[in-house]
Image (cartoon, rainbow, N blue to C red; front, top):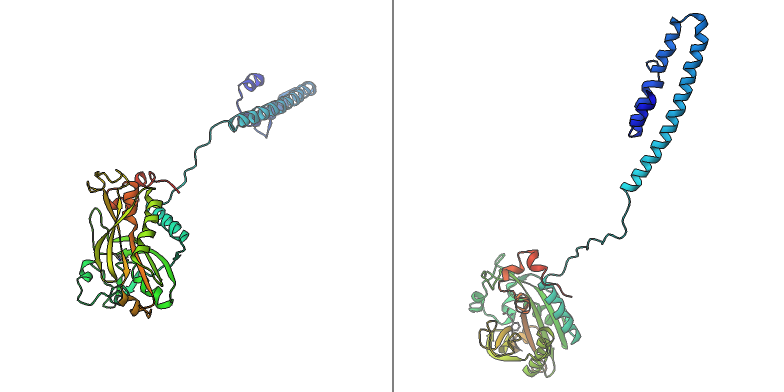
Length: 332
Ligand code: PHE
């Protein structure tokens, strides 16, 4: 009977229970056989005891034997279960990529750093003086409405332009000045191409004999590096209180080569930034001699550049954190 059941044993737990039933403790089958001895005639006891003991030894050996076999078998099963297949292809590790606006910012910093610009980070909270007054924007000037401003108090506001940083730099340092100032700006504006918060990159150069020609030459190099060789710039007259003359800078359409397409709305040109020769008044406001020095400044909207460069038609796509959009723009 023991043999029969032993063959059925599947694991060492079953075996252990089976062994208990037959061999261990007072209630085991072996103990019961021993108890039977009392009922026998004295002359039969010796023979009976001997055979029960033989049975016991035999059963112990069989169990020990089985136990060893079970352990080996179980170890074997475990090895098979836990075997590592080194030839299975690895799951590709998912790594993130930089946000398009960060990409553009890094690219611009690289380009301008290569021309000798230093980075100056201004602050997002400004006073009316730095954001407007020192930039030659009088109290009642329409420019203050033009850029609908978020006021924090009568004195403090969220800067509407990185140009505010120009004043901080020029107050602290005499020319030569060559700075680049990237950062967030805020305007109460909200549609497909405007967001209440967006990013700008300001550039400012002040030195002896700086002219609009220097600005144009530098911008040509810049647009070729960002949009590709062969593109050129065109300056159109514009107005900013802090530059005189002021210009709106267009780049020849990199999509159609200037022939006219949907991106440039058939004109062959795309507006990319505002710039100009630093207004003498602004230099004087900062204690820089406007007879001796002159300069140029420019302000680039980073979201706008990212939208043009990567073909994004709604600025909100840059702020929604939708991975389906962001993962498509994956470059260094
Ligand atoms: N600050 C201007 C704007 O936000 C851009 C600009 C910067 C124009 C520097 C001229 C010079 O529209």
